[in-house]
Image 1: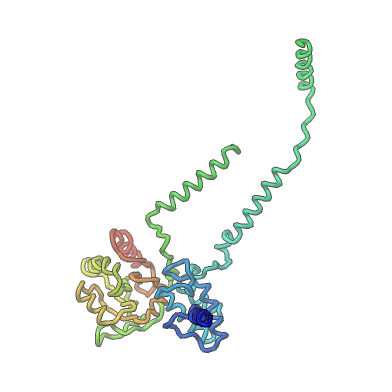
Image 2: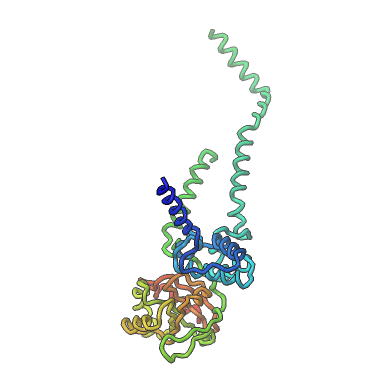
Length: 154
Length: 176
């Protein structure tokens, strides 16, 4: 029993490594700044693997960019400054969440456009049928003739 | 007309996707450079060879279009494009600046000894930080810099196939 508990405790202790940063990286000394930097890294796209953030990526360039982010934050840059530093070099693509601006209005607006389209379709399909137009005199005469023909046959 | 609207929409989308998919100039992995039309970043890098003068921004403003090539001895596609660089330098008389990316000087020089040296000037970016300033995402990448030091074209990946004839040389011509 004691042995099992011992194994369990050891396993838990070892798994703490999963929370640490990559071995060759030095986290910032100030924990608040490190947290800021880590949050920012989650928003930055790795340019090598492209669908991972630099926080997740093992690529060399991602490691360099993590270092850039830490350095900038350590120097007192705001996350906004760091983002624009990276956008200057790699474009909006480097941000995992595209910024809202003229060229992305359609991108951000498309869900709402789609919703509006669906609402339009639903409203259209639910619309009460228009009351039929009254028959014109010629139509009435024609109808009467048909009915009379039917009757005379029967 | 309204009956066929869904069919027309689907066909139009099919056509759009087909055209985009078969566009040979479109590489979905390529990230468009935002540096085009911008001046070259300010930098100073140590020369690659012992005793070679440091390379800095001013060295790129030569009055003539030049090429700036980021390479590394550990980079396989760099080997593939090396013949193109040699031809650009020797046949076309283009001044090419070589920047060794994350490479030790002795290995980078060994690479040039082995394959030939197409570069008029070389420099070493061992930390890869200057490459980040240029927006480099990996090696090889080659930039056309016009005479006044403006980046006018970025070739992403190796210059192979008809890349030199179809892209690099016209870009150099346009930068004149």
